[in-house]
Image 1: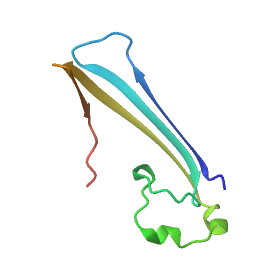
Image 2: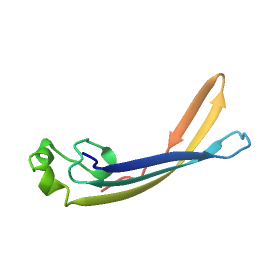
Image 3: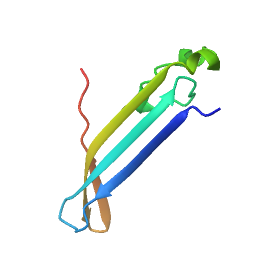
Image 4: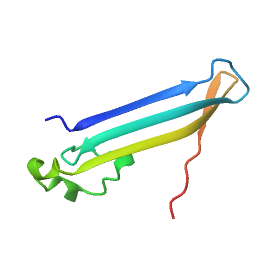
Length: 88
C-alpha cells in the first residue's frame, strides 16, 4: 500500500572552504498507515501500530526539515557538525 513519500537532498557550495556549509532539506508527506518509525514524524510507541490501515490512512502528516551542516577536512578526516535545537 502506498503511504506517502519522503524527499531529502543536500545543497553544498561549489567552492571548498576551511568550514564547508551544506544546506540539508527533507520533506515528508505520509498518511497514518505508514508503519516505519521515523524520528522526524514523532512516532512514539508500538501503540501506533494497533489501528487498522483503513482508519490510519485518513490521518495525514506533512513535515519539512531544514538543517545547516558544517564540515571540515583535516588530516584525511571529514568532520561534520550538525546543530539541533533542544526541545524543552
